[in-house]
Amino acid sequence: MARPRRIVLLRHGESQGNVDDTIYQRVPDHALELTARGREQARRAGEEIRGLFGQDRAQVYVSPYLRTRQTFQLLGLNPSRIRVMEEPRLREQDWGNLQDVEDIRRQRKARDTYGHFFYRFTQGESGADVYDRVGAFFETMHRNFLRPDYPPNVLLVIHGLLMRLFCMRWFHWSVEEFEALSNPDNGEMRILLLGADGRYTLDRPFERWAYPS
Image (cartoon, rainbow, N blue to C red; front, side, top):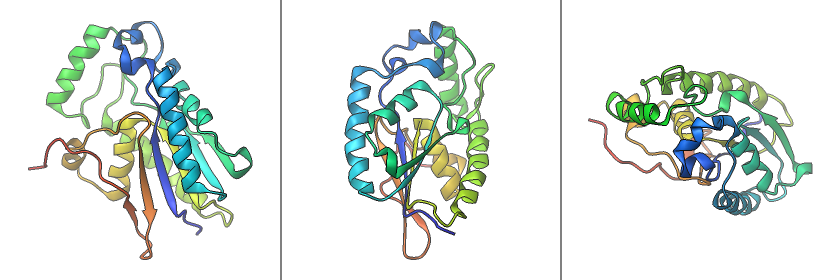
């Protein structure tokens, strides 16, 4: 099994929805674009990722949302050194079609009380649903690891909540641990590094806003 040396998780750059939550009434979540600031965040992330990968090859998995695909395009990776797969299971948590902003704001408050992992948006998904999708993706990814030519680098261009859920699934964190952590900022990365003992460790922790009881 050709296990990669590093697995890089990258949150997309700032999108229209990050600065104007009323846009969800007019534009589907999957069609939101990067802002000018988000494009710059993606370019800066690309500089860092190119420095990490050097001339080594990489397998890239990209959420099918427009903002993640735009982020990937702005990374400036050498197309001859990467293999790219659009992966629908790595999409954002689904809140359900075009949304009534006041209803979504109300549901967000309810989710803060109920818990981000178990709360299910009306016509949408819970964090637990997304966790199940991530687990299904793991099966595909680990099968890919079996290929003798699998690259030493993996890059996932995804979403903030999904980054936490990926690590929760990978490191077997509890629900309480997941709930105590914050999403990374737009354009921010976390890297899983393969150690000499064959185990992966996280390059740096997620910011913590609480401690599990």
